Length: 249
Image 1 (cartoon, rainbow, N blue to C red):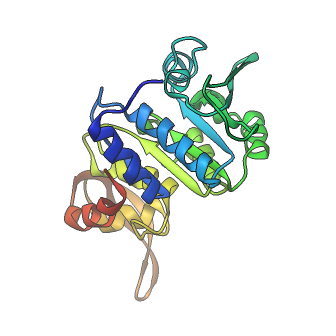
Image 2: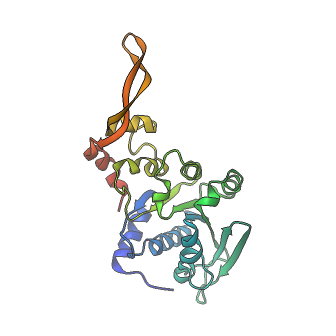
Image 3: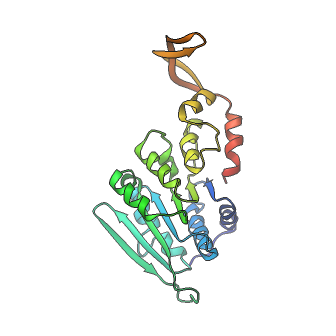
């Protein structure tokens, strides 16, 4: 088992104190290691029974769940059962630390990819396999930045079951503050304070450019009006960042 660096120990303590959050360390600072260590601490406390990890395909296979070189294996210090769910087949392994003297129970890990999780038949199986005592980890969470995508909707459905939700993403808003809406809806819809994406756009986006004929509700009733439909900039970003800041490390 590898030891954590000091900044990773700080990250683990922060994750343990924040049941639903975003870890935004930049690349190569060990977000995966911090997530794995946090899950093990929670299992030892009796707070969770299992972990569901969703990541891009190659990262799921090689970074998280490789039998010999994956990071779950590398950082495991409690009895663990790992299942890698792939298209067409699943693989499973068990890890038992040599110096373990505790319970005969195991921390259960499921690792899969976004492409599978968004398929309705696969999502149904995943939903049946988790409980409120499952920790949901979404790696490379820029994969869920589109509010309308199937994988974003699938991950939101999973997040509604799990009490603990952790997103990992070194560039949480990319080039656009608009990329924050969907991930924070998954973490907790109340954080940003908008009931839906339309309300988010109305509060934080500046519209311009191309115009389209739309039905608009006015004081005298509904009227057809030409309205801008392109986002040309953002406003009130200080409000957006203030609302999300407590949930980001």
